Amino acid sequence: MHMSYRVVAALALVCLVAAGCGGTGDSGADSAEEPATPAVSSTPATTESTPAEAPAEEATCEGRYADYSAAAVADECYTDTILFFHASWCPECRGFEEAIKSSTVPDGAQILKVDYDSATDLRKKHDVTIQSTFVRVDSSGERVKLWSGYGEDKSVDAVLENTK
Image (cartoon, one colour):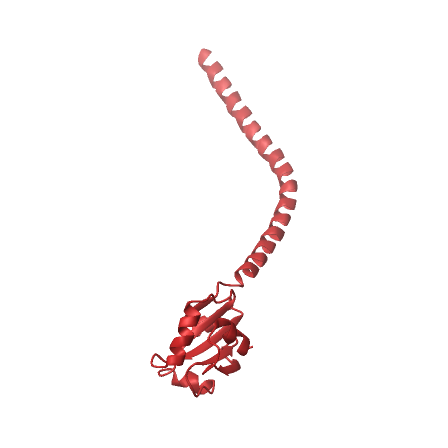
């Protein structure tokens, strides 16, 4: 009889634990579902607004002077892209490059150095006939404005202003 008392007590304990877990889980799930639904509804709204804000902040990149590449032109982070047709043997080009390197290119702007001697297709596309020419292009690489800087003010401001 002592043994059956233990078996009955163990079964009763198992039933209580099972009933307690099942009852708490069901009632907790019911009460958790109702508050969870508004929380889930509000979470996507917050999540949607956060990514929308993040690209806006990333839309303007730190200004730069870099070598030309099609990928750099297509970088939507930059609102102003100017191609600088540069030749290493050209004193005017060296003067512009020195001025650009010693200045700060404004945020959202990039000046991309194009090798005048080797980029003949790009020169033809933009009607560039002389080194130290600057061409503002859009994100698809199409010419917006061309400016020959030969004999002109050698500053980042002059480049940006004359290619608007």
